[in-house]
Every structure is written in structure tokens, then in C-alpha cells.
Image (tube, rainbow, N blue to C red; front, side, top):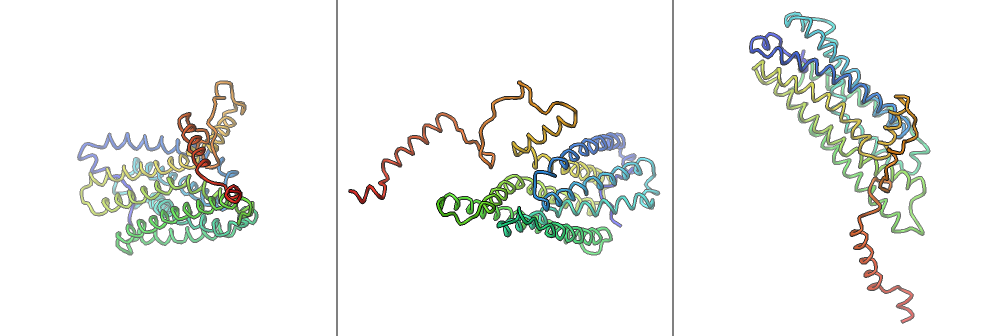
Length: 346
């Protein structure tokens, strides 16, 4: 049975790094509890801000992180309290390791299933907000858990070569990134088409709303998907190095790097979901005020002048120099362009 990121206590005693690893384990515990608070706040916020299918997927991502980190806490406790000889035969430790292995695969494969839901949102843009089609979210979640469980079992019991997992992770995440880029281009074109035919738009009001939501989601989650891809590649490299090397000291450092990268993943998801969007950031601050019992009304110090932005978070009011250049370029364009009616009169 393969284990993820287990520190060899005997080797750390021999090379004199046991105190360093003990400190890093306690720091890891502290960061896990911090991430619990951050991710718990994030779950509270996303419930009312996204489509139910998207919320369902994000909740499963958070849920796997909570359970995975709980399993990691059990691993840490057993690592500290048991010797290396008894550690790998302990039933609780083995179950915690199996659970964590399975849930890590949900984290590294999440991007592709997330993009499947977004593709469905684009395909059903006519009425995706009105007819929520909750079965899409449930089907995606079931397929995701089934695939990840099979992949985890293959990895844990060493049924197929490790290179299969590495190539599979890179391929699936690369496809997810291409899908994200494609959706961005497709919805941008649809959005521009709305303004090219203002009088006779080919899109209904609900379609326009869905197009805007798709663009906003792609903009916000493109960095998140890149983060997931980076995490997946990093985990693949660390796991490969841990299995291939015979140096126990190197294995220990790779284990520390893997565990800290998992925590970084858990802290990065709320950052890319909320802090990249000013509106979501305001919702986050309001939720924190409510949580700490403070008045939701901003004080005079908080009422700073905020820049006016469009629905995608881009500034509408530019600098004076930019406004002047835009003004004169528009005048020049109007002077050099002859109106059709004027040409008929001439």
C-alpha cells in the first residue's frame, strides 16, 4: 500500500533533523486550522452568489479539503505517538491514509469536472438560470467521485505504473485549461455580438445575463484553474520523487513539501474565488463583520471613493490623459466618417 507524505522518524533521528520536522508539523497543524476558518467563511459566501450546480461542485471541493486535512491531523498524531514499526500496521493510520489518498485525487482532477459544468452552462445559456438543471451537477459529482476513487485505488495498490497517473493528471488539466480559454473566447464573441446588433439582438435577456455570468466566471476561475494545474503537476513530481528515491532524508523533505502544498491549495481557492472580484470581496467583508458582530454599515473611514467598474471588474473611469486621447480620437473618427444620409444629400 502506498502512503502519501509520511515522515520517517528513524531517518530524521539519524540525520539530526527530527527537531526541524517536529516544528514544521506543529506549524502545519496551525495552518490547517487557519485554512478551516478561511474555507468555512468561503462556503458561507458562495452559497448565494453562484448557480446551484457550481455551488455543489465548489462545496465538494471544500468538503474533500476538510476531510482530507482531518485525515492529515490523524496522520500527524499517529506519526508523533507511534514508532515507525507500528505506524504502517495501525488500522486508524491506514484508514486515514487511504481516505486522504482518495480525496487528493478529487483536488487534482477537479478542474476538468468544473469546466464540464461551465460548458453545460454555455450550451444551455437560453434558460440555465431559469431552469437550473440540478441533475447536471449531480451527474458531474457522481462521475468525479467514481473516477477519483478508481484512480486512487489504482495508485494506492500500485496496479499501474506511476507514469500513468502523471500523464493522466497533465492531460486532464491541460484539457481543462483549453476549455477555459475556449469558453472565454466564445462568450466574449457572443457578448460583443450583443452590441453589434443593438436594435435586433439575437440574444434574449436571459441569454445576455448567462453570457455575462459565463465571462465573469471564466475571468475569475482562470487563475484558479491555473493554480489547480500547478498543484497537480507539483504533486505528481513530489509523489514520483518520493517513490523513486531511496534517500530517506529526501523523502522526508518531499513529504513536507507535499503537505504544505496541500494547505496552500486550500488557502488559494478562497483567494481566487473572492479576492479577485471587488463585489465578492465586499460580500466577504460583510460576512466577516456579521461573524464578529460588527455593524454592517461602513464607517466614514471605510467609505473611501471606489472606482466605478463595469460588470467584469474593469475600470470605467480612466485617467485624464486617457480620457483626453479617447475624446479626440472619437472626434477625429466622426469628422473623417461620412454619415450615410449625408452622403445621399451630397
